[in-house]
Image (cartoon, rainbow, N blue to C red; front, side, top):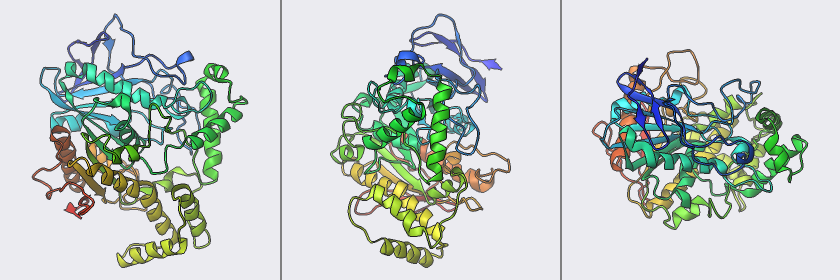
Amino acid sequence: MKKTEIIKIKSGNLQGYINEGISIFKGIPYAEPPIGELRLNNPKSKKDWDDVLEATEFGPEAPQPYNLNTPLPRPIQSEENCLTLNIWTPANDSEKRPVMVWIHGGAFIYGSSSRRLYDGLHLVQRGNVVVVTINYRLGPFANFFIPGAKANAGMLDQILALEWVKDNIGYFGGDTENVTIFGESAGAFSVCALMVMPKAKGLFNRVIAQSGAAHPLGLRKSVLKRSSEELMSELNLKPDQIDTFRKLPWVDIIKATHRLNRKAASRGIRLSFSPYIDGDTIPHHPLKAINEGYAKDIELIIGSNFEESKFNHLVFPNFKPADLNNLSKRMNGQLRLTIEKDYDLDNIINTYRTSREKNKLPAEPQDILDAFNTDNTFRIPAIKFAEAQSKHQKNTYMYLFSWRLPNIYGAMHGLEIGFIFNRFFNVDIPTLPKKSEETETLSKNMMDSWIRFARTGNPNHTSIPKWPSYDIENRSTIIFDKEIKIW
Protein backbone atom coordinates (compact mmCIF):
# COMPACT_ATOMS: atom_id res chain seq x y z
CA MET A 1 0.00 0.00 0.00
CA LYS A 2 1.47 3.33 -1.06
CA LYS A 3 0.94 5.92 1.66
CA THR A 4 0.10 9.58 1.20
CA GLU A 5 2.20 12.28 2.72
CA ILE A 6 1.32 13.13 6.31
CA ILE A 7 -1.44 15.75 6.39
CA LYS A 8 -1.68 18.23 9.24
CA ILE A 9 -5.24 19.28 10.03
CA LYS A 10 -6.63 21.22 12.98
CA SER A 11 -7.01 18.14 15.22
CA GLY A 12 -3.67 16.51 14.44
CA ASN A 13 -1.73 14.63 11.80
CA LEU A 14 -3.06 11.82 9.61
CA GLN A 15 -1.96 9.67 6.71
CA GLY A 16 -3.98 7.84 4.08
CA TYR A 17 -3.08 5.77 1.05
CA ILE A 18 -3.04 6.14 -2.74
CA ASN A 19 -5.07 4.04 -5.18
CA GLU A 20 -5.10 4.65 -8.94
CA GLY A 21 -3.61 8.09 -8.39
CA ILE A 22 -6.27 9.15 -5.87
CA SER A 23 -5.43 9.97 -2.25
CA ILE A 24 -7.85 8.21 0.10
CA PHE A 25 -8.39 8.86 3.80
CA LYS A 26 -10.76 6.62 5.73
CA GLY A 27 -12.17 6.58 9.24
CA ILE A 28 -11.29 10.16 10.20
CA PRO A 29 -13.06 10.95 13.49
CA TYR A 30 -14.96 14.23 13.47
CA ALA A 31 -16.60 13.83 16.89
CA GLU A 32 -16.02 12.26 20.26
CA PRO A 33 -17.57 8.80 20.70
CA PRO A 34 -21.29 9.37 21.49
CA ILE A 35 -21.29 7.09 24.53
CA GLY A 36 -22.20 7.49 28.18
CA GLU A 37 -23.59 10.97 28.76
CA LEU A 38 -23.18 11.71 25.04
CA ARG A 39 -25.68 8.98 24.12
CA LEU A 40 -28.90 10.82 23.12
CA ASN A 41 -26.96 14.08 23.38
CA ASN A 42 -25.53 16.63 20.97
CA PRO A 43 -22.24 15.52 19.38
CA LYS A 44 -18.96 17.06 20.52
CA SER A 45 -16.04 17.86 18.23
CA LYS A 46 -13.15 15.41 18.27
CA LYS A 47 -10.36 16.35 20.65
CA ASP A 48 -6.85 16.82 19.27
CA TRP A 49 -4.59 13.77 18.99
CA ASP A 50 -0.80 13.52 19.23
CA ASP A 51 0.29 10.59 17.06
CA VAL A 52 -0.16 10.25 13.31
CA LEU A 53 -3.62 8.81 12.65
CA GLU A 54 -3.51 5.94 10.16
CA ALA A 55 -6.53 6.79 8.01
CA THR A 56 -6.48 3.64 5.89
CA GLU A 57 -9.51 1.69 7.16
CA PHE A 58 -13.17 2.62 7.40
CA GLY A 59 -14.47 3.38 10.86
CA PRO A 60 -17.17 1.22 12.45
CA GLU A 61 -20.74 1.46 11.25
CA ALA A 62 -23.35 2.99 13.53
CA PRO A 63 -25.16 0.34 15.61
CA GLN A 64 -27.86 -1.26 13.49
CA PRO A 65 -29.39 -4.61 12.62
CA TYR A 66 -28.43 -6.23 9.32
CA ASN A 67 -31.95 -5.92 7.94
CA LEU A 68 -35.34 -7.42 8.62
CA ASN A 69 -34.46 -10.77 7.03
CA THR A 70 -31.19 -11.55 8.84
CA PRO A 71 -29.99 -12.19 12.37
CA LEU A 72 -28.29 -9.57 14.46
CA PRO A 73 -26.37 -7.87 15.79
CA ARG A 74 -23.72 -6.95 13.29
CA PRO A 75 -20.40 -8.30 14.50
CA ILE A 76 -17.25 -6.20 14.78
CA GLN A 77 -18.25 -3.62 12.14
CA SER A 78 -20.73 -1.83 14.42
CA GLU A 79 -20.07 0.22 17.52
CA GLU A 80 -21.15 3.55 18.97
CA ASN A 81 -17.77 5.13 18.23
CA CYS A 82 -18.97 5.57 14.65
CA LEU A 83 -18.74 9.30 13.92
CA THR A 84 -16.13 9.24 11.17
CA LEU A 85 -15.81 10.43 7.59
CA ASN A 86 -13.87 9.42 4.49
CA ILE A 87 -12.22 11.49 1.77
CA TRP A 88 -11.20 10.83 -1.84
CA THR A 89 -9.14 13.59 -3.46
CA PRO A 90 -6.99 13.93 -6.59
CA ALA A 91 -4.25 15.66 -4.58
CA ASN A 92 -3.53 17.30 -1.25
CA ASP A 93 -2.62 20.64 -2.74
CA SER A 94 -3.83 24.22 -2.79
CA GLU A 95 -6.14 23.79 -5.80
CA LYS A 96 -9.70 24.56 -4.80
CA ARG A 97 -11.84 21.72 -6.13
CA PRO A 98 -15.60 21.35 -5.73
CA VAL A 99 -16.49 19.26 -2.68
CA MET A 100 -19.27 16.65 -2.79
CA VAL A 101 -20.43 15.34 0.59
CA TRP A 102 -22.48 12.12 0.42
CA ILE A 103 -25.06 11.33 3.11
CA HIS A 104 -26.17 7.70 2.96
CA GLY A 105 -29.72 6.42 3.19
CA GLY A 106 -31.30 3.57 5.11
CA ALA A 107 -34.53 4.84 6.70
CA PHE A 108 -32.47 6.41 9.53
CA ILE A 109 -32.00 2.85 10.83
CA TYR A 110 -29.53 1.20 8.44
CA GLY A 111 -26.50 2.10 6.36
CA SER A 112 -23.01 3.54 6.57
CA SER A 113 -20.46 5.49 4.57
CA SER A 114 -18.32 2.38 4.10
CA ARG A 115 -20.63 0.53 1.70
CA ARG A 116 -18.85 -0.43 -1.52
CA LEU A 117 -21.56 1.30 -3.52
CA TYR A 118 -20.45 4.70 -2.16
CA ASP A 119 -16.77 4.43 -3.10
CA GLY A 120 -15.81 7.88 -4.40
CA LEU A 121 -12.87 6.79 -6.56
CA HIS A 122 -14.48 6.93 -10.00
CA LEU A 123 -16.40 10.14 -9.30
CA VAL A 124 -13.16 11.86 -8.25
CA GLN A 125 -11.20 10.50 -11.21
CA ARG A 126 -13.82 11.68 -13.67
CA GLY A 127 -14.57 15.09 -12.23
CA ASN A 128 -11.47 16.40 -10.43
CA VAL A 129 -13.64 16.88 -7.33
CA VAL A 130 -13.21 15.96 -3.67
CA VAL A 131 -15.71 13.39 -2.37
CA VAL A 132 -16.53 13.01 1.33
CA THR A 133 -18.78 10.32 2.81
CA ILE A 134 -19.96 10.50 6.41
CA ASN A 135 -21.33 8.30 9.17
CA TYR A 136 -24.00 9.56 11.55
CA ARG A 137 -25.97 7.97 14.37
CA LEU A 138 -28.95 5.82 13.44
CA GLY A 139 -32.15 4.47 14.93
CA PRO A 140 -32.93 5.29 18.56
CA PHE A 141 -29.37 6.55 19.08
CA ALA A 142 -30.09 9.34 16.57
CA ASN A 143 -33.74 10.19 17.10
CA PHE A 144 -35.47 9.35 20.36
CA PHE A 145 -38.27 11.09 22.20
CA ILE A 146 -38.01 10.60 25.95
CA PRO A 147 -37.39 13.18 28.70
CA GLY A 148 -33.77 14.37 28.59
CA ALA A 149 -32.97 13.21 25.06
CA LYS A 150 -31.67 15.89 22.69
CA ALA A 151 -33.70 16.36 19.53
CA ASN A 152 -32.38 15.28 16.14
CA ALA A 153 -28.97 14.11 17.36
CA GLY A 154 -28.27 12.30 14.09
CA MET A 155 -28.94 15.45 12.08
CA LEU A 156 -26.63 17.37 14.40
CA ASP A 157 -23.97 14.73 13.67
CA GLN A 158 -24.32 15.59 9.99
CA ILE A 159 -23.96 19.30 10.73
CA LEU A 160 -20.83 18.69 12.82
CA ALA A 161 -19.37 16.67 9.93
CA LEU A 162 -20.12 19.57 7.57
CA GLU A 163 -18.45 21.96 10.01
CA TRP A 164 -15.41 19.65 9.96
CA VAL A 165 -15.42 19.85 6.15
CA LYS A 166 -15.64 23.64 6.33
CA ASP A 167 -12.65 23.77 8.69
CA ASN A 168 -10.43 21.10 7.11
CA ILE A 169 -11.24 20.21 3.51
CA GLY A 170 -8.84 22.88 2.26
CA TYR A 171 -5.99 20.63 3.47
CA PHE A 172 -7.21 18.02 0.98
CA GLY A 173 -7.48 20.20 -2.12
CA GLY A 174 -11.14 21.11 -1.61
CA ASP A 175 -12.87 24.47 -1.87
CA THR A 176 -14.58 25.36 1.41
CA GLU A 177 -16.76 27.85 -0.47
CA ASN A 178 -18.04 25.31 -3.02
CA VAL A 179 -19.69 22.41 -1.19
CA THR A 180 -22.52 20.25 -2.52
CA ILE A 181 -24.34 17.86 -0.22
CA PHE A 182 -26.05 14.92 -1.87
CA GLY A 183 -27.83 11.87 -0.58
CA GLU A 184 -30.35 9.15 -1.32
CA SER A 185 -33.53 8.14 0.52
CA ALA A 186 -32.98 9.09 4.18
CA GLY A 187 -29.87 10.89 2.93
CA ALA A 188 -32.03 12.89 0.52
CA PHE A 189 -34.51 13.61 3.30
CA SER A 190 -31.50 14.77 5.34
CA VAL A 191 -30.15 17.18 2.74
CA CYS A 192 -33.62 18.70 2.33
CA ALA A 193 -33.90 19.16 6.10
CA LEU A 194 -30.37 20.61 6.30
CA MET A 195 -31.44 23.32 3.85
CA VAL A 196 -33.66 24.84 6.56
CA MET A 197 -31.73 24.03 9.75
CA PRO A 198 -30.28 27.25 11.21
CA LYS A 199 -27.10 25.51 12.43
CA ALA A 200 -26.37 24.32 8.87
CA LYS A 201 -26.57 27.79 7.35
CA GLY A 202 -23.49 28.63 5.28
CA LEU A 203 -22.03 25.10 5.32
CA PHE A 204 -22.97 24.21 1.73
CA ASN A 205 -24.01 25.83 -1.54
CA ARG A 206 -25.89 23.13 -3.43
CA VAL A 207 -28.09 20.12 -2.79
CA ILE A 208 -28.83 16.95 -4.75
CA ALA A 209 -31.73 14.95 -3.30
CA GLN A 210 -32.10 11.46 -4.77
CA SER A 211 -35.37 9.67 -3.98
CA GLY A 212 -36.32 11.54 -0.87
CA ALA A 213 -37.76 14.87 0.21
CA ALA A 214 -39.52 16.30 3.21
CA HIS A 215 -43.00 14.80 2.95
CA PRO A 216 -45.77 17.35 3.59
CA LEU A 217 -47.01 15.36 6.59
CA GLY A 218 -43.61 14.05 7.72
CA LEU A 219 -41.35 14.92 10.67
CA ARG A 220 -44.15 14.36 13.15
CA LYS A 221 -43.23 14.25 16.83
CA SER A 222 -46.14 11.93 17.62
CA VAL A 223 -44.78 9.14 15.40
CA LEU A 224 -41.34 9.24 17.03
CA LYS A 225 -42.87 9.47 20.50
CA ARG A 226 -44.88 6.29 19.91
CA SER A 227 -41.86 4.38 18.57
CA SER A 228 -39.70 5.58 21.47
CA GLU A 229 -42.26 4.52 24.06
CA GLU A 230 -42.62 1.10 22.43
CA LEU A 231 -38.87 0.58 22.54
CA MET A 232 -38.58 1.65 26.18
CA SER A 233 -41.36 -0.81 27.01
CA GLU A 234 -39.58 -3.57 25.08
CA LEU A 235 -36.50 -2.83 27.23
CA ASN A 236 -38.64 -2.94 30.41
CA LEU A 237 -37.93 0.72 31.07
CA LYS A 238 -40.18 3.67 31.85
CA PRO A 239 -40.00 6.74 29.58
CA ASP A 240 -38.19 8.80 32.25
CA GLN A 241 -35.34 6.28 32.74
CA ILE A 242 -32.85 7.94 30.40
CA ASP A 243 -29.92 7.32 32.76
CA THR A 244 -30.60 3.59 32.71
CA PHE A 245 -31.01 3.67 28.93
CA ARG A 246 -27.60 5.35 28.60
CA LYS A 247 -25.97 2.51 30.54
CA LEU A 248 -27.44 -0.34 28.50
CA PRO A 249 -25.14 -2.19 26.08
CA TRP A 250 -25.88 -0.91 22.60
CA VAL A 251 -26.38 -4.50 21.43
CA ASP A 252 -29.37 -4.89 23.76
CA ILE A 253 -30.96 -1.74 22.36
CA ILE A 254 -30.43 -2.90 18.77
CA LYS A 255 -31.86 -6.34 19.54
CA ALA A 256 -34.98 -4.75 21.01
CA THR A 257 -35.28 -2.41 18.01
CA HIS A 258 -34.95 -5.38 15.68
CA ARG A 259 -37.70 -7.29 17.48
CA LEU A 260 -40.03 -4.31 17.21
CA ASN A 261 -39.17 -3.80 13.54
CA ARG A 262 -40.05 -7.41 12.76
CA LYS A 263 -43.36 -7.06 14.57
CA ALA A 264 -44.11 -3.87 12.67
CA ALA A 265 -43.08 -5.39 9.33
CA SER A 266 -45.46 -8.29 9.89
CA ARG A 267 -48.21 -5.64 9.95
CA GLY A 268 -46.85 -4.03 6.77
CA ILE A 269 -45.45 -0.96 8.55
CA ARG A 270 -42.11 0.26 9.91
CA LEU A 271 -41.11 1.81 13.16
CA SER A 272 -39.90 5.35 12.71
CA PHE A 273 -36.83 6.79 14.38
CA SER A 274 -36.70 9.77 12.06
CA PRO A 275 -35.99 13.48 12.64
CA TYR A 276 -38.85 15.65 13.83
CA ILE A 277 -39.83 19.30 14.10
CA ASP A 278 -38.73 20.39 17.57
CA GLY A 279 -38.97 24.16 17.09
CA ASP A 280 -35.22 24.63 17.53
CA THR A 281 -32.89 22.42 15.49
CA ILE A 282 -35.67 22.00 12.91
CA PRO A 283 -37.88 25.03 13.63
CA HIS A 284 -40.46 24.49 10.87
CA HIS A 285 -41.43 21.88 8.34
CA PRO A 286 -38.80 22.07 5.57
CA LEU A 287 -41.42 22.37 2.83
CA LYS A 288 -43.01 25.36 4.58
CA ALA A 289 -39.63 27.04 5.08
CA ILE A 290 -38.61 26.39 1.46
CA ASN A 291 -41.92 27.83 0.25
CA GLU A 292 -41.14 30.98 2.22
CA GLY A 293 -37.68 31.32 0.64
CA TYR A 294 -35.55 30.26 3.61
CA ALA A 295 -33.01 28.53 1.34
CA LYS A 296 -33.32 30.81 -1.68
CA ASP A 297 -29.54 30.82 -2.24
CA ILE A 298 -29.27 27.00 -2.42
CA GLU A 299 -29.20 25.47 -5.90
CA LEU A 300 -31.04 22.16 -6.18
CA ILE A 301 -31.34 18.93 -8.15
CA ILE A 302 -34.12 16.67 -6.95
CA GLY A 303 -35.71 13.56 -8.40
CA SER A 304 -36.89 10.01 -7.99
CA ASN A 305 -36.91 6.60 -9.67
CA PHE A 306 -39.75 5.33 -11.82
CA GLU A 307 -40.53 2.26 -9.72
CA GLU A 308 -39.23 3.14 -6.26
CA SER A 309 -41.59 0.91 -4.33
CA LYS A 310 -40.54 -2.32 -6.02
CA PHE A 311 -37.80 -2.16 -3.39
CA ASN A 312 -40.46 -3.20 -0.86
CA HIS A 313 -40.55 -6.65 -2.47
CA LEU A 314 -37.05 -7.09 -1.03
CA VAL A 315 -37.17 -5.53 2.41
CA PHE A 316 -40.39 -6.88 3.90
CA PRO A 317 -40.17 -10.49 5.10
CA ASN A 318 -42.80 -12.78 3.59
CA PHE A 319 -43.81 -10.12 1.08
CA LYS A 320 -47.26 -10.84 -0.32
CA PRO A 321 -48.44 -9.09 -3.50
CA ALA A 322 -51.63 -7.10 -3.35
CA ASP A 323 -54.75 -8.61 -4.86
CA LEU A 324 -58.20 -7.31 -5.75
CA ASN A 325 -59.46 -8.15 -2.27
CA ASN A 326 -56.92 -6.07 -0.34
CA LEU A 327 -55.71 -3.37 -2.76
CA SER A 328 -58.17 -0.79 -1.44
CA LYS A 329 -57.29 -1.57 2.18
CA ARG A 330 -53.54 -1.28 1.57
CA MET A 331 -53.83 1.97 -0.37
CA ASN A 332 -56.24 3.40 2.17
CA GLY A 333 -53.73 2.69 4.95
CA GLN A 334 -51.16 4.86 3.17
CA LEU A 335 -53.58 7.63 2.22
CA ARG A 336 -54.82 8.08 5.78
CA LEU A 337 -51.24 8.82 6.83
CA THR A 338 -50.57 11.36 4.09
CA ILE A 339 -53.80 13.09 3.04
CA GLU A 340 -55.73 15.27 5.43
CA LYS A 341 -58.85 15.70 3.28
CA ASP A 342 -61.50 13.37 1.88
CA TYR A 343 -60.63 11.33 -1.19
CA ASP A 344 -62.33 8.96 -3.63
CA LEU A 345 -60.27 5.77 -3.41
CA ASP A 346 -62.09 3.95 -6.22
CA ASN A 347 -61.43 6.87 -8.54
CA ILE A 348 -57.74 6.90 -7.58
CA ILE A 349 -57.41 3.17 -8.32
CA ASN A 350 -59.24 3.49 -11.63
CA THR A 351 -57.05 6.44 -12.64
CA TYR A 352 -53.89 4.41 -12.04
CA ARG A 353 -55.30 1.37 -13.86
CA THR A 354 -56.43 3.40 -16.88
CA SER A 355 -53.16 5.32 -17.10
CA ARG A 356 -51.04 2.17 -16.92
CA GLU A 357 -53.14 0.36 -19.52
CA LYS A 358 -52.95 3.40 -21.82
CA ASN A 359 -49.15 3.41 -21.51
CA LYS A 360 -48.97 -0.39 -21.97
CA LEU A 361 -47.70 -0.97 -18.45
CA PRO A 362 -48.75 -3.90 -16.23
CA ALA A 363 -51.91 -3.03 -14.29
CA GLU A 364 -52.32 -5.89 -11.83
CA PRO A 365 -53.20 -4.87 -8.24
CA GLN A 366 -49.57 -5.00 -7.08
CA ASP A 367 -48.47 -2.89 -10.07
CA ILE A 368 -51.06 -0.27 -9.13
CA LEU A 369 -49.97 -0.36 -5.48
CA ASP A 370 -46.28 0.00 -6.43
CA ALA A 371 -47.04 2.97 -8.69
CA PHE A 372 -49.19 4.61 -6.03
CA ASN A 373 -46.59 4.12 -3.28
CA THR A 374 -43.85 5.46 -5.56
CA ASP A 375 -45.87 8.60 -6.24
CA ASN A 376 -47.13 9.08 -2.70
CA THR A 377 -43.82 8.53 -0.92
CA PHE A 378 -41.25 9.81 -3.41
CA ARG A 379 -42.43 11.45 -6.61
CA ILE A 380 -45.05 13.86 -5.27
CA PRO A 381 -42.91 15.09 -2.33
CA ALA A 382 -40.05 15.71 -4.78
CA ILE A 383 -42.34 17.68 -7.09
CA LYS A 384 -43.70 19.77 -4.23
CA PHE A 385 -40.17 20.50 -3.01
CA ALA A 386 -39.03 21.50 -6.50
CA GLU A 387 -42.10 23.70 -6.92
CA ALA A 388 -41.34 25.48 -3.65
CA GLN A 389 -37.63 26.05 -4.31
CA SER A 390 -38.08 27.05 -7.95
CA LYS A 391 -40.11 30.08 -6.84
CA HIS A 392 -36.96 31.51 -5.27
CA GLN A 393 -34.02 29.80 -7.02
CA LYS A 394 -33.75 29.59 -10.81
CA ASN A 395 -31.15 26.81 -10.63
CA THR A 396 -33.65 24.15 -9.58
CA TYR A 397 -33.67 20.95 -11.63
CA MET A 398 -35.84 17.83 -11.70
CA TYR A 399 -34.98 14.31 -12.91
CA LEU A 400 -36.67 10.93 -13.23
CA PHE A 401 -34.51 7.78 -13.34
CA SER A 402 -36.25 5.19 -15.52
CA TRP A 403 -33.55 2.68 -16.46
CA ARG A 404 -34.87 -0.74 -15.46
CA LEU A 405 -33.30 -3.94 -14.23
CA PRO A 406 -34.36 -6.86 -16.47
CA ASN A 407 -36.43 -8.45 -13.70
CA ILE A 408 -39.30 -7.73 -11.33
CA TYR A 409 -37.37 -4.98 -9.51
CA GLY A 410 -37.35 -2.59 -12.48
CA ALA A 411 -36.30 1.01 -11.74
CA MET A 412 -36.46 0.44 -8.01
CA HIS A 413 -35.43 2.57 -5.05
CA GLY A 414 -31.66 3.03 -4.83
CA LEU A 415 -30.87 1.72 -8.30
CA GLU A 416 -29.45 5.05 -9.51
CA ILE A 417 -26.70 5.09 -6.87
CA GLY A 418 -24.48 2.69 -8.82
CA PHE A 419 -24.73 5.01 -11.82
CA ILE A 420 -23.79 8.10 -9.81
CA PHE A 421 -20.69 6.45 -8.32
CA ASN A 422 -20.00 4.25 -11.38
CA ARG A 423 -20.08 1.19 -9.17
CA PHE A 424 -21.09 -1.90 -11.11
CA PHE A 425 -20.37 -5.45 -10.02
CA ASN A 426 -20.07 -8.46 -12.30
CA VAL A 427 -21.81 -10.71 -9.84
CA ASP A 428 -25.13 -12.49 -10.17
CA ILE A 429 -27.18 -10.33 -7.80
CA PRO A 430 -30.59 -9.45 -9.26
CA THR A 431 -30.75 -6.03 -7.58
CA LEU A 432 -27.44 -4.71 -8.95
CA PRO A 433 -26.86 -3.52 -12.52
CA LYS A 434 -23.95 -5.19 -14.25
CA LYS A 435 -21.20 -3.34 -16.07
CA SER A 436 -21.96 -3.00 -19.77
CA GLU A 437 -21.60 -0.44 -22.52
CA GLU A 438 -25.17 0.68 -21.82
CA THR A 439 -24.74 1.13 -18.07
CA GLU A 440 -21.33 2.77 -18.51
CA THR A 441 -22.70 5.35 -20.95
CA LEU A 442 -25.64 6.25 -18.72
CA SER A 443 -23.38 6.34 -15.67
CA LYS A 444 -20.90 8.71 -17.28
CA ASN A 445 -23.68 11.05 -18.38
CA MET A 446 -25.22 11.12 -14.91
CA MET A 447 -21.82 11.55 -13.23
CA ASP A 448 -21.02 14.44 -15.55
CA SER A 449 -24.31 16.16 -14.68
CA TRP A 450 -23.74 15.74 -10.94
CA ILE A 451 -20.12 16.93 -11.26
CA ARG A 452 -21.04 19.88 -13.48
CA PHE A 453 -23.76 20.90 -11.03
CA ALA A 454 -21.33 20.66 -8.10
CA ARG A 455 -18.88 22.84 -9.98
CA THR A 456 -21.21 25.49 -11.42
CA GLY A 457 -24.80 25.00 -10.24
CA ASN A 458 -25.85 23.94 -13.75
CA PRO A 459 -25.97 20.19 -14.65
CA ASN A 460 -25.85 20.62 -18.41
CA HIS A 461 -23.06 19.20 -20.55
CA THR A 462 -22.63 18.36 -24.22
CA SER A 463 -23.58 14.66 -24.03
CA ILE A 464 -27.17 15.18 -22.85
CA PRO A 465 -30.13 17.14 -24.24
CA LYS A 466 -30.42 20.63 -22.80
CA TRP A 467 -31.76 20.18 -19.27
CA PRO A 468 -33.98 23.20 -18.51
CA SER A 469 -34.47 24.41 -14.98
CA TYR A 470 -37.73 23.48 -13.28
CA ASP A 471 -40.66 25.81 -12.85
CA ILE A 472 -44.35 25.33 -12.13
CA GLU A 473 -45.39 26.37 -15.63
CA ASN A 474 -43.18 24.03 -17.70
CA ARG A 475 -42.18 21.34 -15.17
CA SER A 476 -39.20 20.34 -17.31
CA THR A 477 -37.79 16.98 -16.20
CA ILE A 478 -34.87 15.01 -17.57
CA ILE A 479 -35.45 11.27 -18.00
CA PHE A 480 -32.35 9.16 -17.36
CA ASP A 481 -32.84 5.92 -19.31
CA LYS A 482 -31.28 4.04 -22.22
CA GLU A 483 -32.19 7.18 -24.14
CA ILE A 484 -31.88 10.42 -22.17
CA LYS A 485 -34.67 12.86 -22.99
CA ILE A 486 -36.54 15.87 -21.65
CA TRP A 487 -40.12 15.41 -20.59
